[in-house]
Length: 267
Image (cartoon, rainbow, N blue to C red):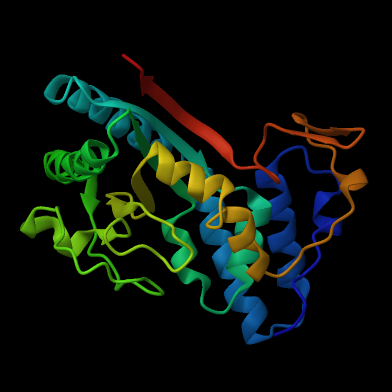
């Protein structure tokens, strides 16, 4: 595979991340049309349509605002944080370049429900309770529907039976009873909005979250498998993005993921 296309020219004159994407699409369309570039350009067009769709963002926020209250009302003893983030453009750009990266369109936006408390065994059971609740809640939502899960990969079979209700097991990737080889644990489900776009939901305990963020299963380790992308940051002139000393401030989702929702219940 050829080297990932540079973004330096696309930054010139751009005042937002969507402008950078539009510029890059235009530049790629001027290149000699290899099949690889044509496919990559199409992926960028889909990514652009996803992040600029305000109706999708409204749908996601309304769905999870409602689900927050659903958990609170039906299981008042569950303490949790619900947060949503959108993958940064640089991260998505590198992933879209990979030959098998069509799947990345299903995790551009991700929502995570993290449960916490002092009883680990109880928390694990609550993860499955919340996933069951999420599935059933989605069946009554007009704009969102669950998708069948793909088979698990690189996991260590625990031998335990799943705590998921039988009818939703085909929709969930259960990394709690079948953790990844690096110890990663979580429950995953993909949803499709009626607009045609996908997003992922993860449910885990606080201890699982800490291992995924700072332990052996850290996303920083995972991302090393993707191609590096060097670009001239001095060319970036987007309001909400700057570097002071060695500190990056990125409120626009260029290099850092963008928070799109946060709710939590602590008592």
